[in-house]
Image (cartoon, helix red, strand yellow):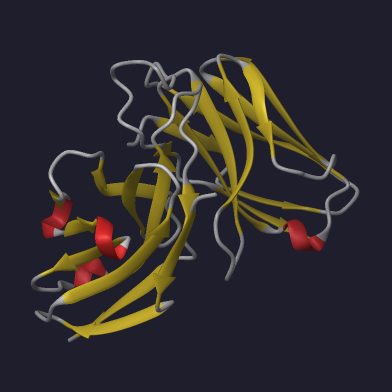
Length: 117
Length: 116
């Protein structure tokens, strides 16, 4: 149990579907992240929310839409995806940078394995 | 800009042998450095981290890493491999700068296989 929970763990969707990935953290953190992990490619940072404000969007296609309604929850809304979007999507959290409790690392969930047919 | 290079995408060792996973980084400012491990179908778990204190860092499961500024390296070692160490290992760098969040740059990963 890492304190970061992702659902669903596995998702299969067609290219015309709309689905969402959910992440919830129980660590009292104020920053949340979405990473994409594809086979044979480095981890790619997609989005970062700090204090519920999006602070980074790394040229991610608009078919991926993040939402952070509060500091404990993060969503990734998916629509009209492509087969190359099939990957493991990892959520992570951390304390706010300037907090004394922040020692620099990220705390990861177990990931949502997405397959786009 | 920061970057991380992990030498060897696959490493295979015998059970009981030394494990050495290589990581070199590029950073224009003093970095924080991390090693994470990922077991099949799981997320990333922190093994150890360097945050400008002792240059030899001990982590979980018997792993350790040494920060060598002159070589810009942060190699991961374990004296004796166990079958349960088979996993993928990621080195990551984060610049020590103020800001609202922890921006980690990850290497491509090294898959460790341990055979009897």
